[in-house]
Image 1 (cartoon, helix red, strand yellow):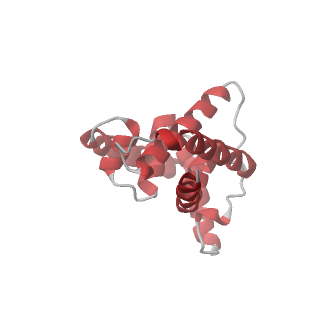
Image 2 (tube, helix red, strand yellow; image 1 turned 90 degrees about the horizontal axis):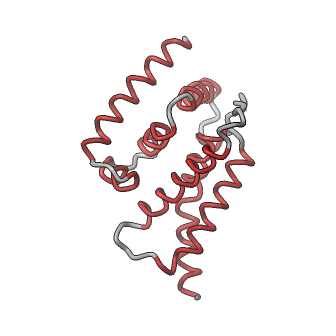
Length: 163
């Protein structure tokens, strides 16, 4: 039990910020994102003893987070999402207003993407290797590469429309 606790604490410390950013990308609401982070790590705790080490902890946790976000989106499908203009500083340590405004515009454009595309681009923005993204999503690395290319093209078009 003590070993499980230590592993969990280490995983929480290492991945909590990334999981928050992923959840915030979907919810655009800090308290909802924090609730999803708690839900993700509850699942990690519950399933930690049965983790089979077929993949890295990071891949396993990313998959839990992605599935948790997707499940929440499906639950909320009938409820329209209200996007707030207050993008929190959790996305950047830089307090520069231009950078914050650019981040806000980018994350608003990301919010317009499909569920799976949001997960993919969120993982790309976290510098997760495409091979690992494929493992998280259960698709090939080549398929991830194609999807990333299409998503970037779609984001450029969305951002061009808003400028």
